Image (tube, rainbow, N blue to C red):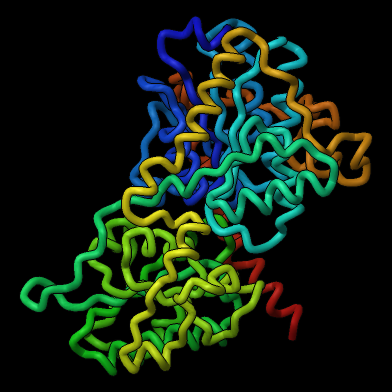
Length: 454
């Protein structure tokens, strides 16, 4: 069904973790035509967000379902086959391999039905590793969003360097930047607040994480007039975009009595930033949120400036510093030119950051409405990558031609959206299985890996 025949444009967001759900849902909101409705799909897997994580993100779609990728594609196929409100726009907020599989499934949908939705994808934050790998896995989407001018240039260079079409690359910004500009702490209102934005896997080692925790506790002791908060990404047993083998809260339990002005906190990052006077991190995307709001931001060099840590991205930003300097009272000052080039967009610049992406989306939706969207043509095909693509698709139970493998389909691929209630027994069994799987990945697997290194 053409988009122009819809009274209300329909959008689907498919995400595989809490942070990617946040990116995908907000991106849909930035690009959507006025009055559009959004359905959310959570890709079933290791990092499927919990109810608490979804509540912390604070973004609820019009409907929500947990599905395997083959189930999501089956739902789209059903909607197109019987004209039951097909989606006009699909936002893929997924890891690269899942994006590639979804693109091949959507390409097959277009071949079989002659029409397909507009497809948008991108990155949830700073792209500091696997640049070529991740970009080529996203090739084939109608829009590949870049979060800054620097990223847009890098993305186009990769595509053009392998002879792939780069016209899908579109400069935008991180969709979750916002909030009130920084207002310095007033001694009569609240204490000066230092927030350390933790990351699940950066750094990964116990010694490095213990160093950061000890320095943060030491900063609290050295500055009893300050409030020092360790902002955690998840609770033990939960997953985020990256695996956290050594949670800070477990390390903190071994530190004995903590200073009264030191606390571990969860919650929405935007709300935490509302009371932040100094944001400290290794390389968290929270640094970009902080800089956007003109909050002094420290990117730590304690563990080196290394690609593996991602803090090399901030070279030239003016934010690189160490705990020693912070203990002495140093306050970093961000470089305006670096901010402009790297998508921070403080002040009024952010208001127009999505204008180009929004205009291109509108033009693509018109093509979709006229059934004139070109076929999806990923860079990877069985001809160009015969030793790589089948394995990628197979992990998501798809054949090399984008069709589901036998037995791949969930009996009710999107029953949360169709309003069907699962039986109590099936719900309990599936919930227990997912809990056992997550426990194994987060608790048992890291132990086995550590034993293997002994």
